[in-house]
Every structure is written in structure tokens, then in C-alpha cells.
Amino acid sequence: DRRTDVLHPSEIIKSDWCHRYAYYLLNGGTPKKEKPNLRLQNIFDEGHYIHAKWQRRFQEMGVLYGKFQCYSCRNTTFGLSPEKCDCGYSDLEYKEVALVDDALRIAGHTDGWIKGIGDDCLIEIKSIGAGTLRYEAPDLLMDADGDVTKAWKNIRRPFRSHLLQGQMYLELVRRMYGENAPKEIVFIYELKADQDFKEFTVKADYEIVERVFFAASKV
Image 1 (tube, rainbow, N blue to C red):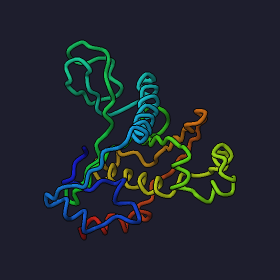
Image 2: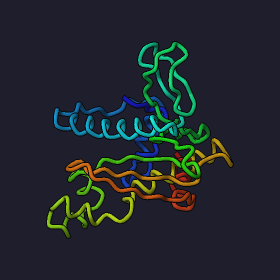
Image 3: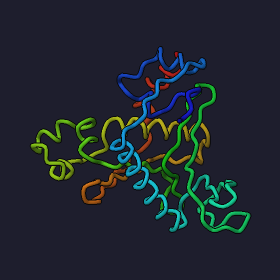
């Protein structure tokens, strides 16, 4: 149900991104939609829960910056872990930080902006399971003889598509906020099987995604 009149970073970093289909959608074309089966819906819901869990922890620490929506009146507040809405209700849902380049019609959302723990950083939360490994790191899974837990232990850096997506967010936030923008992104990986986690910090490097922005400009 997400917008089709913009280019999404998670899509345009893919090697099989179709420029023609993107142009078709930007000009009002009807998107191809598939209704997920129950198993796929469960996968989506589990990923959403893991995101919300980590965001709630940072929110309770008072270091999560961005847009928050009140569960009661549905109004939004932008700030650093606000304790309550203007209506007085204290239960707020994090709605992340929109990252937009209007000229290129790129729009996305980072999973979080952290303030107050050293230098500012963005965060990107990824739930890792067998499907993720088959798609992102088949070699790791093969070397582990299909054992997800063993393959998990051998993850030493973020997967390529995640790195590209993170660098897209860092460049977009730089274009929006200038010198006040975070200059690094922290990836939090959580293994679905047993809730183990890993953390990776990556500094901004525009050269990694320069070709993606160029492709977006051509579209």
C-alpha cells in the first residue's frame, strides 16, 4: 500500500530494478499487486514486531528522534522521545523519519535517528532468518550446510543490499539536514530463531551509491 509516485530506496538499490516500470508508476500507472498468503503475512508481521521492539527501547531511553503519532487523537509530534501528546495521552507510536529528495522524487523512511549516545546516527533494523540468508548470503548458508545458526555466527558485516540502502539514507539525510545530519548508520541484526543480535556501524560514503542517484535522475 505504499506510494507509487516516488522512488523507494529499498527498490532502486536492487540489481534487477526496472527503470521502465518505475517510470510507468511515476506517471500514474497501476502497480502490480499480489495478496500475501498467511505465511508471508506472518513473516511481515514478525519483522514489524522486531522493528517496533527496538524502536520502543530507544524511545524509552529518551534518545529516539523523529515523528511520533498519538494512539488516542492520532495527531503527530516531531521531536526527541516525547513523553506525551499535546492531548495528554502518553502512549505514542514511532513513525520514523521521512527522508526525501523532491528533485529526484526519492522518498523513504529510516528506522530511527538516535541522539544523545555519542554522535548522532541513523539505525536500520533487520530481522534475519533462513529466507534472508538464502537471498542475501547464499554462500554463507551453503558453507554452513544449511544450518541457519551456524551461518549467523559467520556474518561479519552488513549484507550488500543493506549497505546500499543505508548509504542511500545517509545521503538523503545529508541533503535534507546538511551539517546537522548523522554521518553514520548502525545496523541492528536480530536472528529470528533465537533473538540473538549483532551490531554494525557504517560511515557515510556517497561514492557507493552515486550510480543509484544517477539512475534515479535519468528516470
